Length: 334
Image: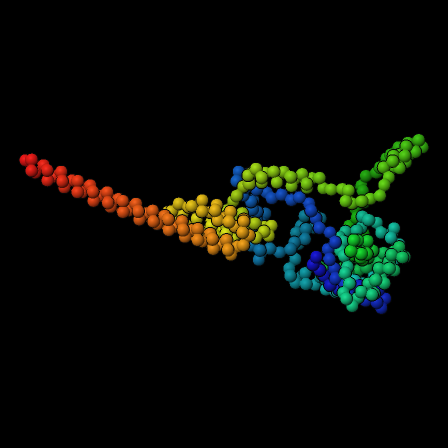
């Protein structure tokens, strides 16, 4: 994990230097829009809705759309006057009971790790939060914007850590515009509902649940890859961080050079070199063997060409001698 922010938690006269780590990551399945015919990526242009012309990045500004559809263009000078902050302080405003925080307000979660000098005050804050069954309501500046958040304790395999969870502003929580009319609920129905709850009661274990959709998509993709159903385009690149096999790259370079000279490639030599690479596991040694194999193959071809040339020359000489003898015989007969 890599820290994305450094600062300090301050409550009263106590300051706890900490590092901030993102506590969650999304594994949501995402797809690319491609041309069904050849798998080419679909590209989008930045077109102006008024004149239809493509707009360069340098000409793009920020615009605020009003409720009546008017557009207000904001300049860099306008944005410079906005109340932004670069404070590195997580200021505790108050400690409140945990049940007073509506889960609907909670947004992004982060882990707080103490710096070496803040280990003891970090532990004190953690124990105070746990024993009081309260959370700390704080203000913090992330990405130059001040937001409210809460600090609470979370148990993990690595130990108990303090978690910072940013909160949405109250006016960002929507009020439902519909009413729920349930009608009359009988006591017997309530009793039956309670029995159902007790039947399905249990403890929550996150590992018991999995993303069936993502797993199914991965299975389909693997099956298509194994079946050779992969679209290779000129712009295809590896994005998984895998190291490209050096020997294979060298072999492709040799083949490309041969094709440029009008020569045929030697697939057998390539296959032998790849087999040697798998058995030895040593890139440098394998490269030398592949180079020797390529040199040997080239020498064999060269020798074959020389032999063929000698045979052709000898055949031509024999033919000339035979023609001369026939001509001399005809003259003597006449």
